[in-house]
Length: 484
Image 1 (spheres, rainbow, N blue to C red):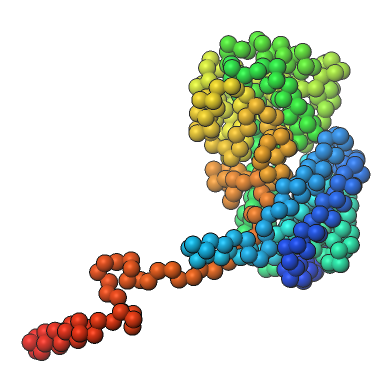
Image 2: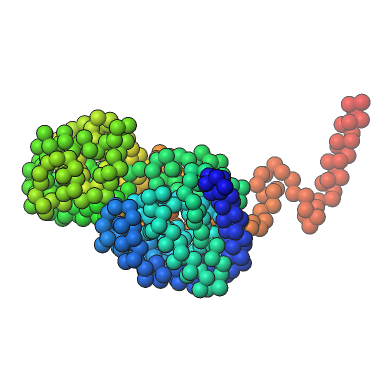
């Protein structure tokens, strides 16, 4: 059989099996599903090291240590956050207003998985889908098919250990565009959970199936003059170097006030960050963009020293981030874009108002609705930024990478970060199980219609004014006779 046709048929078969498994899950109680989620979380954490190593080996992106952390975040940390959520059956009662809300799972969820965070995304999406009563079918990125397949296998074994059908978690065995298209558009696919590049998210939203998708994150971070400079620089470095810059919430550009420029520069240099000369900047720019103006996939998730060698420049062997001075934003200025690697643009503005404008300009260039970082002790400035910025997450005095995914903030642990309507997303949330079910509302009558208007007559039998009604009827009859 033709490979494309075979992939389509296999996709159809898997979706149908997934639907059958989900119907069985839908009969389970909250307690039974919570017990299953705990087992899945434990399996994800137990295999965190193995899966991290597989992901690095197969994709060449990121590093082992941080991918282990991401796998733990997607399993144990996520479990601790969602374990007490009500997601099955009655989830809310309002006795005063006579309302009862009942969770209704979507059914089969299509999970699109990026190559940048392959194993952690599978663990995370499995957890939130099953917690909310759904099954999930993954469409793997072709360059991460093996590590995604192994993660799915571990999830399936965890499900089976609790006496439930393995097909609650499944993966397309043949990676073709036709198979993914079938998954997205199949009548038994109820929701798409899309994490990845712009093309993938666009395909999800244009499929005709309800979708939750996230866009790119060109995240600026502003250092205001009241900030603890050493702490700010340290946290930016921690965020930018985490898994070599692969998370979409990682810092892409630093914006500083003129009065603290030199202090910030020196602090970066003391922490093994390298500032390019104008000539070196041109060489670095040549490897950031590909021939069509998109991001060069060869730089994604690489170490700073590797990037320097690719560009043909010399940097110290202990360099962790390469920084370039920039003033402009947009096409033709590669350091102003999302780079998914330890590369930073460096902007200097006269005051916080101009810095605010620069951050908005950067967000408009591929980061609308995503995230923004600020380091400051001035609560008024922080609030002003929060009121004006077109973002869904504003992260204060923390690495944006780790704050955005809920590792260092009170945000929900998540690898699907909604960008809101301004960013072309259906939600601005860090997506959790609460985003993966609809609500059936049971509503008791609490008012009589005559109570809503003083002109509407009460006509209940218990309050019927017989004499008054007879008078009205006689009056109408006499008026009709007179009219004739």
